[in-house]
Amino acid sequence: MLHSFCTFPRCHSFRSPSPFPKTQNSWPAQRMDDPESAEQPPAQRSALRALIPGREFLTSRKGQLLLAEWVVSLITFICYVASTAVSLMTVPLIEFLWALFTFFAYSTKLNEQLKGIFWPLLDFIRCVSAAIIYFVISLVAVSKYSCGASKAAAVLGFIATIVYAFDFYIIFNDLIEFLKKGDSTDDEPQRRKSGGDDDDTDSDSD
Image (cartoon, rainbow, N blue to C red; front, side, top):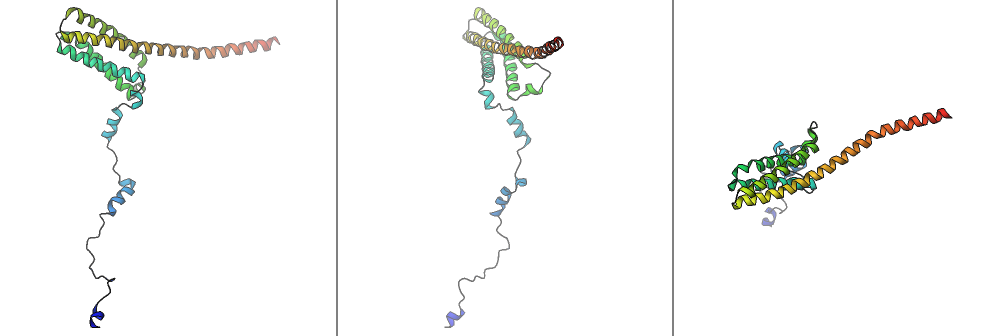
C-alpha cells in the first residue's frame, strides 16, 4: 500500500527544462522559407554566365563556322611555331584572335549593342581576307619548306581557306537578300504614290 501510494504515474515527468531551446532543426526551415534570407548569386557568376555561349548559338551554322575557324587557326599557329616556317605564324595568330572575338561578339550579342558597326560587312571582309591570306601562306609553306610541321600547317591552311570561303559565301548571300529587301521597301512608297496619282487622273477624267 505504501509503495503504491508513494509511486507517481509514469505520465508525469519532472525533468527540468533545458536552458538552451532546440532551435537547430527549425532554423534552416525558416531560412529556406524566407526569400529575403536566401543568398543572391554574386555579380561575378552572372558575368561569367554571360560570357559562356548559349547552346542555341553553338548549334547554329554561324556558330559552328566561327568555332571551326578559330580552332583551325589555333592548330595552324601551333604547327607554324613548331616548324621552320616560324615567320608565317603571325597570320594564323591574328586570324585566331579575330575569329575568337567575332565568336564571342555574336554569342554574347555584343554586335547588337555596338550599333555603329555594320557587322555583316565587317565579317565579310574578315572572311575574304583570311581566305586569301591562308591560301597564299599555304602555297609558300608547301613550296619553300620541307619539314613535316610546315607541311601539316600548309594542309591546315588549305582547310582554313575552304572554311573561310564557305563563310563569306553565306555572308554574301545574306547581304544580297538584305539589299533586295531594302530595295523592295524603298519601292513601296513610290508605288503607292504612283497608284495615288493614277487614281487622281482617273477621277479627273470622270
